[in-house]
Amino acid sequence: PEIDMVTTPSGKPVAMVHSNNCTSDLNAWVELFGEFAQLLGMEVSQTHLFETLYKQALKGEPEAGGLLAYNTVSGEHITQLEEGRPLFVRTPESRFTLANFMRVHLFSALGAMKIGLNILFDEEQVEIDQILGHGGFFKTEEVGQRMMAAAMNVPVSVMETAGEGGAWGMALLAAFLKQKLENESLEAYLSGKVFANQQASTITPDPVDVAGFEGFMIRYIKSLDIERKAVEVLR
Image 1 (cartoon, one colour):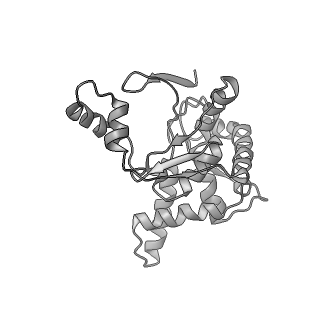
Image 2 (tube, helix red, strand yellow):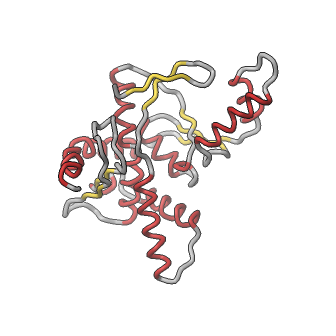
Image 3 (tube, rainbow, N blue to C red):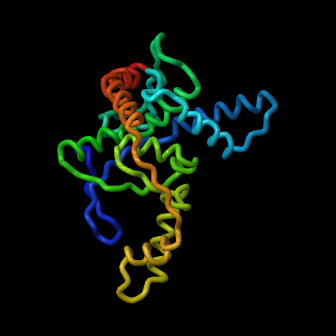
């Protein structure tokens, strides 16, 4: 039940790990830091703000210093949560630094997805050679790629269009329907006309990052009762 069986637009079968929550809670924290900067009289563009904070995560400890975050603005079927309660939790011994704080929230954005991936990797023996990343998570150079590579333990590539997401993909499908040649497949259209001249960068998993993410996931899964209790009592 955690895996959605869908198809590509051209009908190829896909096992999709679909998580409802990604960076909404993280975005809220970045906006809070932006508000603080304004109080100090600093004019910081949103792009610079995100890049600065995201890159700080690369300086964090592999396991994010023992910090814990749940990014559940809404419910999450993979973790069996009907509702969401965004949470940030730490013990007195956790290393509460900005780098660890940003790192744990980037980790949390991938937490539910990782549970579904473990089903595919461990139970279904699915093997993945490479991931192509798209969406706002990859707008800041290197950061999203490294986090995703650590979570999936596979190389992650991004192209110049990496910052674009679902709306751009829908526009591509519309363009294909309008511009395709007779008997031209979607795959041929994308590889020959859309991505042919795109430069891609690839990041392979860093064993230290992979081990750090695994340590975070042990904490994330073990402590899910905190999130469930928050849904129950925080009204």
